[in-house]
Image (cartoon, rainbow, N blue to C red; front, side):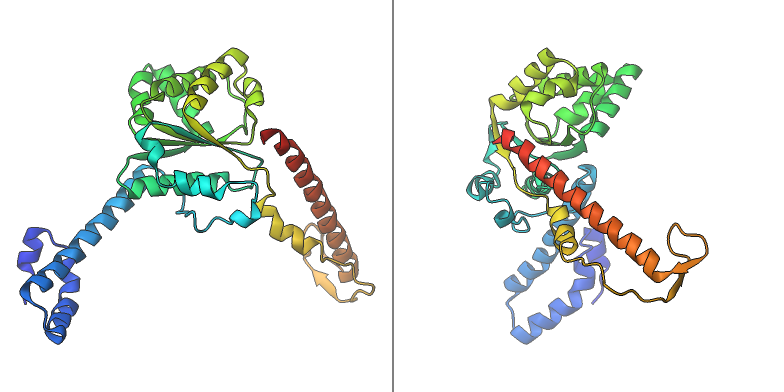
Length: 301
């Protein structure tokens, strides 16, 4: 069968799928109506997939994350019921916000990404950015005299995700352009934020307590705040391995050439012992760091 007509109609997905569709139609003795429905369904699904791919690239979304992939059992202090409720995206209809607070590694970005992908696949416009990239972009536009135009990039989407708030202090100019953005989106569009800072620390982050209060007032007015005070996903597997490390009582005398940081060849026992001790020390430091993060996170609850 010639596929010229399919090309003329723009049915690109049907062209390679047509032979197996015809085979199925013959073997199952499909009616014309059932066959046509299958053909059109192939094209519709393909177009939807291409559309989502284009829009995800335009939204600068990270790799896809889902709520089913999130280990709620590892973060028992987080309400799975509330997260699942928010996953229904009703907050987008009321231009409400979602704020995810907690120490590094607890899954804030995972959840923010899952919300973003759900919104995108539901047909909403989405934009994802780190705070650093966002304020740098707006600050550059302000210096060029194009801030008003550039702000539209961040005010148009139904959902804006601002990730990694708190890793660097903002300059006065950056803090003010952030306020302008938050003010422009207030009660007009939903924003999801992730931050490792408590609200009390935002004054230091923005370098201005009054400005921080104004920003938070608009963000929190219509918002669900999710505080995650559990342990880091990134460290849990590494720490579990480190806790099992033991220094062997006897070492091999085999010589290793080109060991990291060592000129020439050295005895394996000396090199291995030094690297093992360094690994254990690093793990102990990571454990102390985790305990400090968890202690600080108590203030979020």
